Length: 383
Ligand SMILES: NC(=O)c1ccc[n+]([C@@H]2O[C@H](COP(=O)([O-])OP(=O)(O)OC[C@H]3O[C@@H](n4cnc5c(N)ncnc54)[C@H](O)[C@@H]3O)[C@@H](O)[C@H]2O)c1
Image: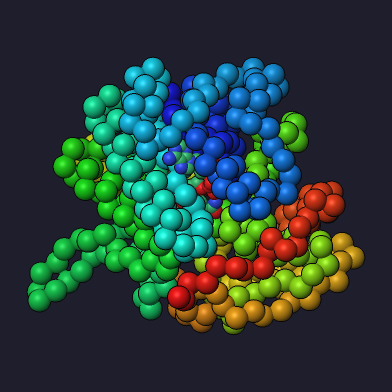
C-alpha cells in the first residue's frame, strides 16, 4: 500500500515510517518541523539528539534498503499538501501532524490559537486532499483517549447507544476534554465524522492513550534511528518525566493526589495498531473508532513501578506530591472498553519491570544531558 505519514518526523511518525516500509509498504513522510522548533524555542530539547528527516531516511535506506519519500512542509498549506498528494497518490494516510501537548495548548493565547488552527486546518486540508485528489484513500487519524474525560460510566469504543423516551439512537460518545489540545482532538474527530457521512470518506480514529518507549524492532539496528524522548513539562509524558527524575536523583513529582487513571501503551503497539487499521480499512462512509491502549494505571501506580524498577538498579527514589497545575479529577471511575484492536489481532506488550529497567538504563546512558529544571510544571490551567 502507498502510505503517506503526515507528521513523519515526530515521536510516533518516524517509527511508523520505518515499521510500514519494512513490511513492504511504499511510504512518504511529510513534516514541517514544528515539534523540533517548539522544543528549541521552549528549552525542551529531547534527551537524545536525532538527525533531521532527510538524514534519518538516508540512514534507514542504508540499513534496510527501503527508500522513503521525504517532504518538508506544512499540512496547513494546501498547495504543499496537494502537491504531495498528486505526486504520491496515497492509498492510506496516517495523520499525526498536530500540536500534541496539553500544557502547550494552555500556555497563552498564541499557543491556544496555534493549536486550534494547526490541528483543525491540517485535518480539513487532509479531508479535501483525499476527496479531490485521492478518492478512496483511507484516513487513519491519531486521536486521544483524553477526549472522553473521566465520566462516571463505562467509556464505549467511540459510540454510545442511547434510549430516550422509548426511542433509540447511536451517537458519538460524549466528549469532556480536559485541555484545549484535547478539545481540538474532539473537534478533528467531529470534522472527520461529518465528512465520512457527507462525502463517504473511510476514516479510522485511533483514540490513543499516552505512549511510552523509544526503541522498536526497526530502530534497534542503529541508535540514530531511535525516536525522540522528551521528559520536559511541555512535551514529556508522565512516565518519561518519572524515569528521568529517578535517574537524576530528584523526587518523582506526582500532580495532586495521583489517582488520575489513564490507558497506556507501548510504542511497539502503536505501530501494530496503525498497521492493523490500514490493513483492515474502514468502509466508505464509515467513521470507525478504536480505543487504543493496553493497560490502565493511576499516576501513583506509575510512580511506585518506576520506584521499584529503579531500586533494582540501585537507585533510591522518592515520590513527592505537587499542587496539581491542571484541572482534572484526581480520584475517579475509569473503565474504557478496548476490544476492537484486540479483535483485529493486536498482541500487546506490557509495562513490565524489564521494560521499565530497559528505559531507565537508556536514560542512565544519557544522564549527563539531563536538565532537571525542564521537568517541573510551569503551565497552570487556572487563570
Ligand atoms: N505520543 C502520545 O503519547 C500520543 C497519545 C495520544 C495521541 N497522540 C497523537 O498522535 C499524534 C502524534 O503525536 P506525537 O507524540 O508523535 O507528536 P509529535 O509532535 O512528536 O509528532 C507530530 C509531528 O507532526 C509535525 N507537525 C505538526 N503540525 C504539522 C503541520 N501543520 N504540518 C506538518 N507537520 C506537522 C510535528 O513537527 C511533529 O513532527 C498527535 O496527533 C497526537 O495528538 C499522541
